[in-house]
Amino acid sequence: MPEPELPSGPAPTPAPPSGPGTGEPLPLGVDLTPTGHPAVDAGLARLEALDGVPTDAHVAVYEDVHQRLADTLAALDRD
Image 1 (tube, rainbow, N blue to C red):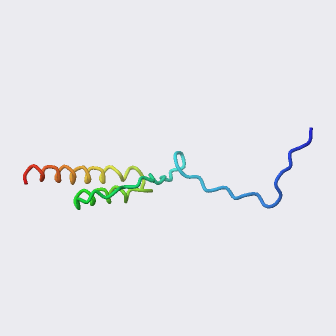
Image 2 (cartoon, helix red, strand yellow):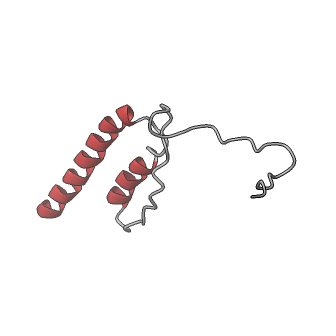
């Protein structure tokens, strides 16, 4: 049986590792669609800023966005 032919030239350089087990955060890659409501869109923009940030920093932002959205909903009841 003949040996498979190997490609010639320099070996490709592997990409640096990222993701689980490497300590490097992966981008979420989630596209956020504007709602047209400035307060809600500001909260969504805060979530977009988390892309590539270590997860231990996410909690404070999630809490802030949750509070902003709760305040926005409460304001609808007052109006």
